[in-house]
Structure formats: structure tokens, C-alpha cells
Image (cartoon, rainbow, N blue to C red; front, side):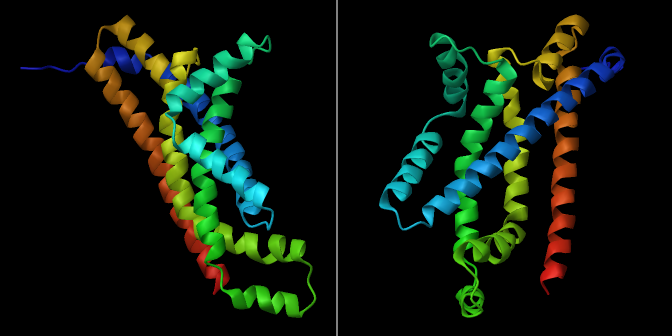
Length: 220
């Protein structure tokens, strides 16, 4: 019968939590980048310029059509081959941000196009310029709609940060592997690591739900 002994793993729990916080910091930075990329892509997709819309389409097809792991490796080794090395954590943040930015852009574009035309027409009737309509009316309503799907993307991004171990980023999964090797307790170690991922993901989901409720009340 299998007997589990978590004591050796819990002795190194502070190391796991430190690595988890590092993973979280990487995830937050990558999510900020993804939001910026997604917002910019959404804005470009609404422009009349055919070149801008085509550039957005190429970006989405490129990053959604290739594996994230391959993108991480290309963005890490590519600059080094050109003589411009990038620290592993920085290339990891860029890779995650660009990859999930493609998904976030599609989410935001769908929400943007769902805004009632009457809101925009009323703003135009009041003489508001297009840029002000975008920043004061369209973008805030878009953000209110996408809170829930964005939280799902962040949860996926946070878990995907484990892929950065392949370029030497010492995040939660790498630290878990080190502790597993030292304690010779693989099942116990990975159960604890899984529990930490689940804990942070639950916080994100609950927080997003509360924020969505707050924004929904504010729109009523």
C-alpha cells in the first residue's frame, strides 16, 4: 500500500512559495504585456487601413498557429544568435505576452463589436471626437465585458509559465523538480506543487468574479 510522507516536502515549502511568487510575478508582467498587445491589436483591427488589419491577421495566425513552447525557444535563442542576448525571464515574459496577446485581442474585439451602436451614435451626436469615444465609452465597456474571459486567460498563462523551465527560468516547476530530487518524494512534491497552482488559480477566478459583479453593478 502506498504511504505518503509530506514532511520532507513541507520543510522546503518556503522555497516552493518563493518560486510560486516568482512565477506569479512573471505571469502578471506577461499579462500586462498581453493586455497591451491585445488592446493595440483590437484597435488596429477596427481601423479602415487594410494594411493594419492584414498585419493583425498575420500576427494572430502566427502566434495562435504555432506551439507556445516553440515560440519560447525562438524568442530565447533567436536574439542570442543575433548577438543580442535576452535574460531568460525577459524572453519568457515576451513570449507569454505575445502568445496570449493574440487570444486576448480576439476576446476584446468580440466584446468591442458587441457594444450597442446607439452608445457610439449618441456620443457622436454630442460632438465627441473618435479618439475620445474610444477611450471614454468603447474601451471601458469592453473591459467590463471581458473581465471573466481575461481571468481565464491569466489562469492559463500562469500555468503555462511552467514551460519557461526549458530556458532556465527557476519558477515553481523547476523548484519542485529540485525538491523532488532532494527529498526522493516525487508524488508528494508534485501534489504540493499542483495544490499551489490550484490555490493561485482559485484566487484569480474568485477575484475576477467579484470584480465582474462590481463592474456589472456600476453599469446598471
